[in-house]
Image 1: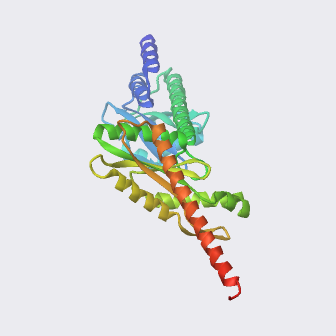
Image 2: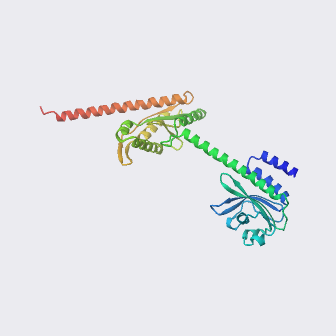
Image 3: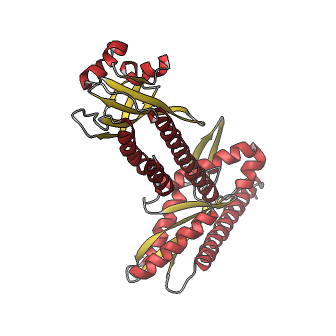
Length: 355
């Protein structure tokens, strides 16, 4: 018994996973019970199945690891229902179990494995094809092992939940909640990686700044809900116009940024920048149905620059793209003013009396 306690202590202290804990326990359980097969199961009550998770077989009987059997037919279910932990005559107790008959089980002992969080996890079992008495201390050892396994399962479930929570927090920290796009923080990380890659590969990086002209008027006229729908719709249109390798981010407010790998420095990167700017701008033009509101949008101001990553930081690249966007915005505003003046002049001439 002292040797068993020492082995158990070593297993518990060194095990990092359920398997690393369970397999030595199955070996110890075989010694304690003297039965041919020891195994750990999981129970899926929703699917009505019991799975053999880990198994150890040392005699003629073979409990196959990895198999699944209907929960309604198992000895484990019958033992739990009746509160019977052990029998050395399975045929007399539960002769209606096809699984037990097919496996040739005559002596059987089990105890449930439970967790505080999810209740019944599975069972820890031992079985033999011959009639064997149960050692006096076997029941206590079996229950102790089941408790330790249940605690390990809870630890692993907790780790899974913590990792899931951390992943969700990381996603929230790097994602714009309205559009689902990367946010400014994530954009800077991506741009820095692209610049480092561009420097290694001797190629440019394209950075585009997009500002939704007239967005304040949309918000003021139709309300913030329509404004939010407008931004989400534009995020979808812009995304659809990009290469799969490009990254679109919401920079803030009504501003978006696109970053992507550009051509080599000797392959006309400025031409690629102009082509991207045209494609982005065109994607924002046209009618939008937002809830019950129809908008005919004249398009965003888009500025795209081809960055030399050998001489430009991420922050400088964004400033250059922002400057390019504002140059486009000023040009669009000037063109709109000229058009308005021309329309006004033409109207005045039509209204004046003939000489």
